[in-house]
Length: 400
Image 1 (cartoon, rainbow, N blue to C red):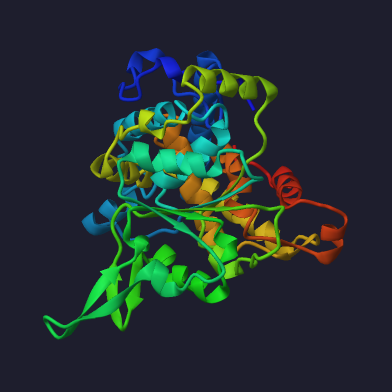
Image 2: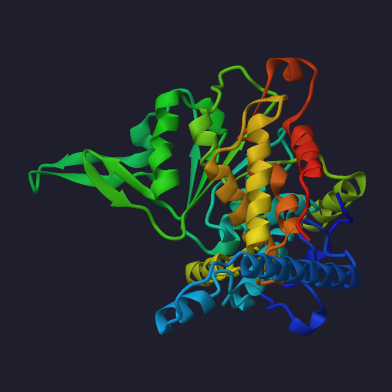
């Protein structure tokens, strides 16, 4: 963890000042050096331009002769990697969300940034951590600050699919069945202790998370836009829990692992708790953006450019997980898409309209750790998925 934040002195509805320098690096504390961020951005841009020039030269050298014509000229000169991204909505949304959540959550910059990146990429997030490290609080504050319709579902062993999706109820007045939507029809859904519900209830989330719709009694109901599921689970408590199916884990864009705060951050947390009168008042955080602003930011993230060498780099990382001797299950094509989507969000949050290999390396762990399975021997030895992923990334040649 980095230094504790000082967001208590900043109003959460302040628009970021463009003259204040480059955006802070992904997952870093606000005190991180702006000069270092600018230098990193310039180096990343130079690397991306070099990669693009190399790809264009390779394309030109291997190009077969062909007939000329206006149709071919237009096709040949169209740049599939061109970006038209306007990052102003992203910068504004990110800084406001960081400041609002930082009012009550001290530190945990990685958790906050990965949740915001997941939201901007249009994905879902699974948060794992021991009790008391602000998993649920951070998710609730994200919902408050984002201004989205919010619902919370406490998963329990007796929870039924209808409790999540909704049900059709017979109306004596109209003599027809009327659909009563469940909490999953909110824009941001917090599922607390997701691993406490049985398989049939977990299966009710498959369609909603992947296709953004729910089919009940043969009728398909669209879910709102934006739509995000944030789920939490406790890794040390196994009694009365159910292992999440691999198919469901694969539908989470990120798995965010939350660690303890640093000692300095814990002192800052106690100081704020005292200053707030010994109470955790969530009303201190209000909506700083709305659904329209988030849709604009998500559209900007989708327009972030990813050059072919970077795409090949993402594919190489995921392909390496499928043949690694320490793994019995590697990442699927959905994992490759998650890596690229997450990389685009990191690039946009860093103030760039193009993604670099470093953006992908930043989110390899959250994007892939839940999509791979260790061999039994490696599990017994205590090897962690993150360790294997780190070795894989170190072995893959970075495009220059």
